[in-house]
Image (cartoon, rainbow, N blue to C red):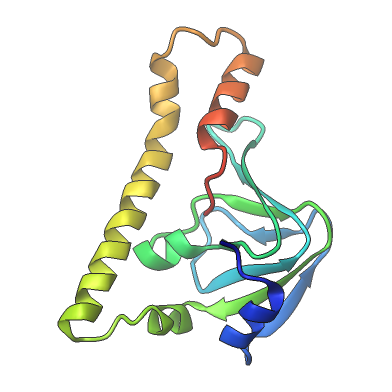
Length: 160
């Protein structure tokens, strides 16, 4: 269930809002994960370049969706680039605030929550990294267009 803009603003009432123009890069692959972005309005696409080719579209995101959570949870650099497909308004939430809200306390419950989320995030990132390798083992796609279509289907719905 996606939260609406008003709900996000009630969770993060003091966080700044940033507007992105159509075509503007919101998150750059390889960048540091300092913030979580919450899309309030507009649409964005998640892209990944594999071996210098044109970027594959991994996902399309809209209002109520978040991006940057995997990098925050794993501590790794951004795994893809996110580009505004229309004008986008987003809340910019510092990573430290996200971790605090998740309840990563020092007690047993907090440690468990943290380990569980970090483990899931690492698995997702490893899978994202390995999918192009698995693609090479398949015999079906024989043209560049067929390979691109297969990869886009494999990555469909994945957020960064």
